[in-house]
Amino acid sequence: MLTATSIPSLWRLARVEYDDVRKRPVLLYPEGAVLLNDTGAAILKLVDGQRSVGDIARMLSERYNGADGADPTEILNDVTAYLSTLADRELIRDQ
Amino acid sequence: MTSERPTTLLAELTHRCPLHCPYCSNPLDLVRAEREISTEDWKRVITEARALGVLQLGLSGGEPLVRKDTEELAAHARSLGLYSTLVTSGLGLTRARAEKFRDAGLEHIQISLQDADDDNAERIAGVRSVKQKRAAAALVRELGFAFSVNVVLHKANLDRIQQIIDLAAEMGADRLELANTQYYGWGLVNRDALMPTREQVDRAFEIAERAKQAHRGRMQILFVLPDYYEKYPKACYGGWGKVYLVVTPDGKVLPCHGATNITTIAYPNVREHSMEWIWQESPLFNAFRGDSWMKSPCSTCERKCIDFGGCRCQAFALTGDAAMADPICTLSPHHHIIESALADANATTPFTYRKFSSEPQPA
Image (tube, rainbow over the protein chains, first blue to last red):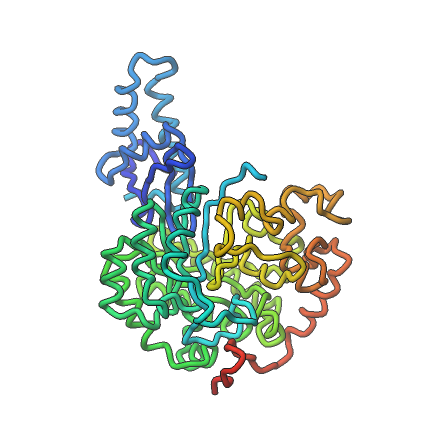
C-alpha cells in the first residue's frame, strides 16, 4: 500500500500508449494490457519517479480546482488507492 | 459476429528450431520452410491485427530467429504502437541481431531455459545450448531490453525449482515464468515422461510462492499450475475467440495454439481471408463463442461463465469431441482419463523429441 509520501515510478517494462482502435489510453507491459480511463491516464502521466503521491494529488487538485467533488483529501485517497492497485500488480514501483 | 476485440497475437513465424524439447506446444505435423508465409504477408497480418485491436505481439516459433526478417517485423509492429516480445531459445541471438532488434524498437525478449542443471538442460533440449543461452541473456541485459526467462516445468526439472529461480535472478531477469507443461502436441505424446507427482507440484508451488515475495520489486515470478492437478479447468485465454489469436507459419489463424489438433472445422488462412473476416465471420472462431454449443454438464453449470467449459483443444484431444467438457473438470464424464494419466506419473518413460518427420531423433 502506497502513502502520500511514496515516490511511485512506472515499472521499466511498462509504457502508456494511446489505442486509436478503442479510443482510449492503455498501459502496456509484457504479456498484458490495462485499458485506462482519462483519470487513470492523467495520474500515470504525472508518475515520473520524482513526484510523491501527495505531489501528484496536489497537482490534480489544482487542475480540477472548483470542479464538483474536487475535494483535495478525496483526490489524495483516490490517487493513493489507484496507484496502490497498480503497485499490487507490480506495475508501479515504490522507490 | 462479436463485439469482442482481441488484445494478443501470437505470431508463430516458423516451426524450424535448433531445439527438440519434448513438451513443445507446436503440432506434431510441423510446417516446413517452403510453406511459410512471406514477410509481406506477416506485415499485413500484423497491420490488420492492430486494426482489430491487438496490443501485444509475440514473435514466436519454433525459433523466430531462424527467419531473417524478424527484426523487420519487430520494427513494423513498433511503428503501429504494438508491444512486442521476441520469444526465443536464445540460439542465434548474435550481437549484430540484438542491436538490430533494439534499433527496431523491440521492447521485450523472453529466453527459454530448460533446467538449472546444465547437463539435464541439454538432455531436455536435445542439443548443446546452455552456453549460447547464457551469452544471449547477458546481451539482452546489456542492451537494456525488458527480459523474461521462461521455464517449462515437468517431472525432470521440477525438483530444481529453487536453483532455477536463483539462476534467473543471477541472469538479471525482470520476469520469470514458471509454466508447468501443458499436454498438447508433443507434450501429450510425452505425457508419461513429463507428468510430475502431486508431491513435486506441491513442493514447487510453495517454493515459488516464497520466492515471489523474496524477489518482489526486482523479478516478477509467475507460477502456472499444471491443470491436471486442478479441480476445474482453465478458462483458455479468457474464452474462445475473445482476446487471443495465433497465426501459424503457413498462415492458419487459430483461437489457441492447441487448435491445430481440432480436425473437424476448417482453419481459416491469411492467404485467403482478412484478419477482420477471420475474427468476425470464420466458422472456426465462431464455433465455441457464447454457450449454445455446450453439452451437459457444462450447459447447466454455474461455472460456465467462469471457465467456459475449459479448453476446447484439450476436450478434442482427449475425447474426440471439442464441444465436450474439458476432462480436467471433476464434473466431466471423461475425468477418468485425467485420473489414469496421473496414476502413470511415476512411470519412467524416455522422451520422444520434437522433430520434423524425416529428421533422426537427437542423441
